[in-house]
Every structure is written in C-alpha cells, then in structure tokens.
Amino acid sequence: MSQRAVTRQTFDEVMVPMFAPAAFVPVRGAGSRVWDQDGREYVDFAAGIAVNGLGHAHPDLVAALHEQAQKLWHISNAFTNEPVLRLAQQLVDATFADRVFVCNSGSEANEAALKLARKYARDHFSPEKHEIVAFSNAFHGRTLFAVSVGGQPKYSADFGPLPGGIHHAPYNDLAAAEALISDKTCAVMVEPVQGEGGVIPAAPGFLEGLRALCDKHNALLVFDEVQTGVGRTGALYAYMNHNVTPDIMTSAKALGGGFPVGAMLTTDKVAASFSVGSHGTTYGGNPLAAAVAGRALEIINTPEVLGGVKWRHQLFIEGLNAINRRHGIFSAIRGSGLLIGCELHSDYAGRAKDFSRAGEAEGLISLIAGPNVVRFAPALNIPEADVTEGLARFERAVARVVKG
Ligand code: PMP
Image 1 (cartoon, rainbow, N blue to C red):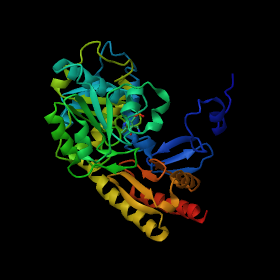
Image 2 (image 1 turned 120 degrees about the vertical axis):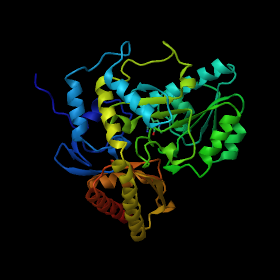
Image 3 (image 1 turned 135 degrees about the vertical axis):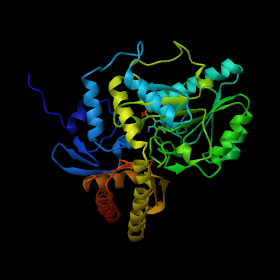
Image 4 (image 1 turned 120 degrees about the horizontal axis):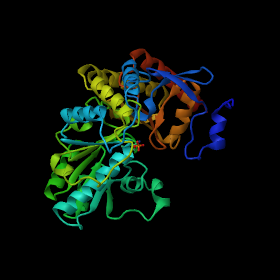
C-alpha cells in the first residue's frame, strides 16, 4: 500500500484542532536551522519551545540514541534500567536533590510534585494541610491539577470542578503571597522566571521571601523549572542564580534534548512520603529517552555551554534594542539568559502572533508568551552567525507588521 502524502492541510482534516501550527511542515533540523517540506530554511529561535537545548540533531545525542537503540528500548518501571539510573545520579550530583522521579513531560513532573506535597503534609501534619499557593499568570501544564495550580483561568475555566484549596497571588508580590500562606499550606509552587506568562523574572528577594514564608509555615517550596531548567538562564537551574534552594523542583523540556523526559527532584525526607504504588508511569525513564537526556545533561552542564549563554544573551539584547530604536515597537525587552521576552508597545497590543507569523514568512521560527510578548528561546549553543541572521529576519518581519 502506498502512503498518501501528508501536508499542512492534513492537519486541518484529521487532527483534533487544539493547536494552530505554522503554515509549513518542518521535516529536518540541524543545529539552529530547520527545513520544511518545500526545502525552505528557517533560523530557529524557538528550539521546540526551549526543548532542543543543543539544537537539532546534535551528533553526540544522535550517537547516544543510536547506541541505546541497539541495546534496550523499553522495559517499564516494573524493572529499572542503566540509562535512567545514570540520569538520576547525574541530577543528584548536580543539584540540591537526593532523589529523582523520572517521567515524560513537565505536566507529569508537576503532577507528581503536587501529589507528593499533599502526601508529605498528610504524613507529617494533617489532611487539613492541603492548600497550595501559586501565582497569577503561572503556567504549570495541562493536566487538571496543573491547570488548577496554573494562574491562567483560560486554561481551566471549562474543566471544572477543579481540585480545591488552591490560591493565587500576583507574581512578585510577596505581601500578597504572605497573606495566603498559612499553616494549612502544604506547598508554594512558583516559576523562577514566568515563561508562558510573559517572560517575567522573579524580582530580587521574591524567591528568598517565599523560602522564609514556607519555612515559617512548614510548607514545601516547589520550583517549576520546566522552562528555566537545564541551562536556559545560564545556570544549570535558575534557582542557582538565587540564594535559595527548593524542597521540590520539576524539570522537563531541555532535559530530554528533544526526547519527552520530565523529572521531579526532591530531598530524602520529602521523597520518603512516596512508596511503592504511590505514583507512577509506564514510560517514565524509558531507556532511549534517558540515554539521550543523560548525554544532553552532560554536555550542557559544562562551563563551555553554560558560560556561552551569557554572551549570546548580550547579543540578543543588543540586537533587539537596536531593532527597537529603529522601529519603536517594544515597551520592554527582558528575560534571563536565553529566555527573552519583548513586550509590545500599546500601539501593537494583542499582536504578538502577527510578529511571529511575519517572522515565519521571513524564515524565522519564534514564539509568543501571551498576546503581548514575542519570546525567543533558541538553542543554548546557537552560533553567532545564526543569531545575527535570525535578528535580521526578525527586523524584516517587524517592518512588514509596522507597514501593515
Ligand atoms: N511548566 C512550565 C513552566 C512550562 O513552561 C510548561 C510548558 N510550557 C509546563 C510546565 C508543561 O510542560 P509539558 O508541556 O511538557 O507538559
């Protein structure tokens, strides 16, 4: 049987219409360049939404995958496997954590973190200590618990009844958080930089303040580092940029180097509240995914890659400021490392998507973070020439939108 050709049109015909993908279908990537079905080439300033930390088809990751593919693809968590044990050991060696649970996505990692926090509070205190404090505009994923703790009602409003006992304070407002955190709080969940919510870094002292409030009320501090982790901000994890350590941290996206991998990291004491049967997943820590993740982590957790984030950040900020001087479209350019957000001037309110779409027409893949922020999250090793070329394409896209 010959296979029918698939095109962008096929998406409209057979996929559940939950996404609005670009007009082209990517078929190949190398480093920070991507090609579509028609052979058109794009500079990639999105890296699969901060996933391909080392770009596309990194030779060492291809080799790790190839090597593992010849040995063992899947064995389930009824057993364990060498790649996942190595990955967990690497994570423990590199972070505050003593224990790791490996899963398949950011949502799953957060689901595990939230369940663990409730179980821990029940074990050590009482079932009444089940409340969770989180933040407006936060994004923690799409499972029911994750949309409930997330602070964007558009993602949860149609799916009630939601889990209860969840409160939201404005991000970076420590006094508002303090008013919500009590002895009934089991966990405070926060992104060190809000990603989907508009690329908003934690204000100085905010995370440290939450740490103190959690200590005062015996609540666990949970950092969602799904977007900020694995080098994105120039530190291996963003908490390392601050004088603060979480009790639980979640990681995904760049952790798998492009494979679906998530992880929840925690201390011995907190981990002890999960035992056999408490929680689980069939695929989590699959040997193929774990082998690629382990190699990606090894490469990223080096001065060469992490240190390189700094000068690339500078290159982006200088280039974007120059574009803004010529076109006056942004009211703010902000971010941390290679997670950069450009807030549109009120004249362009709600039009982030137009800039991103215009970029595609010029051969640039970019992201948005809400209706008013154009977001860039390129590979951590993006070559200087690709940054320059991508920014030139972005400026042509800006000119298109400005001209109308
Ligand atoms: N947390 C954060 C901070 C995220 O940015 C995302 C994804 N954008 C998630 C959780 C959810 O991750 P996933 O899509 O892998 O479930």
